[in-house]
Length: 80
Image (cartoon, rainbow, N blue to C red; front, side, top):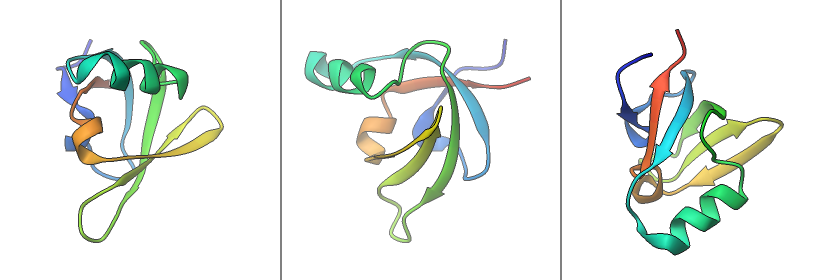
């Protein structure tokens, strides 16, 4: 198991796995879960917008855009 990191610190091209959603309130947690950001889900960071916000991630067969403030609440680990 890798060191826990926040999704907003992951660079484009890197693959990680979701550990948990920490903080951010019940509304954000529910919204992320509905989009498929659940424990164990593999995530690949596709790109970050030129001004640094939002970031595009690949989750299963879907591409999602997350604000950096939202990604801050997603705790991940690098795939080993």
